[in-house]
Length: 351
Figure 1 (tube, rainbow, N blue to C red):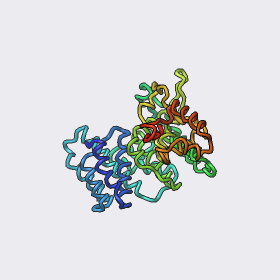
Figure 2 (spheres, one colour):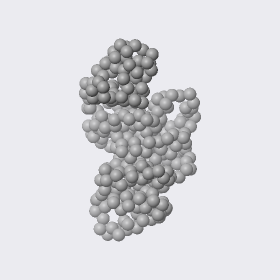
Figure 3 (cartoon, rainbow, N blue to C red):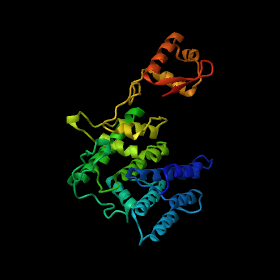
Figure 4 (tube, rainbow, N blue to C red):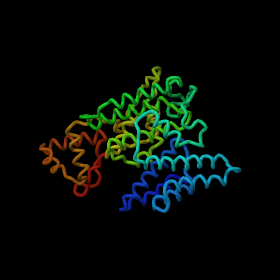
């Protein structure tokens, strides 16, 4: 198996190149491979080499799929747990790359089922089939408790309802924040239905990526590539409640993920933050700090010029230097910004 930092390094060099075609292919591969992490699966070195051949234009995606299939045939009579794990990671990754490279997309229940079928055909016996039993799944972030999933008798109706509601929803005149809150809720609803026995998170991710692209969103592929396990944990927290422990469904973790995915936001996405026992330390910014308009204006100015002087900020905001110093002093105490270096050559950091 290939360690994450190694395959990231292998593919990232293509993203930095000036050739758009190679860069886009590499980003898609990074997303596809990174998504395997939701089930603890790691790619093989052979997959990375195959991905590089495809990125460089030496083979097309069909040839890439064929190479992976043929590679694992040699292990037919001597597969162990590690080989089976990398086989699933490799085959599903190349299939995700194929689907994400396609332009077509139908926003309906059949498309979701079809994606599952294409991803897991020959891997899961129930690929492309709605589950016909109820189950629970222990989650470490819930201290081994489980999310309550939809009853198997209502799966299709629940999916049709959620997707139907989304089709009729208008994003017109919504702010980015309002749109992301709605997208997070829709995504968590689809995932909570849990229509398939296995592979739900990867299927949901591919479906949502394809859906968001229909809006013309410029998706930051690095977010899925590097934070797919956080994505799953955020979905768990969005659908878990325990009245006895005063814990309720919380989509804020998922919203942070989508902010990073769809904008220039850079929220810290740590898995430990999603654990029900995790407590924010003093002065650590909480989710969605309710910045005042004055604070938000200063944050924007600092992001454009970290070396800016408070006198210059005063001129840009139309406020006195004394007022700016007071506001920025409060922002430092809250853990929103920090000053690094001396008075003359220092700079401001947005935390």
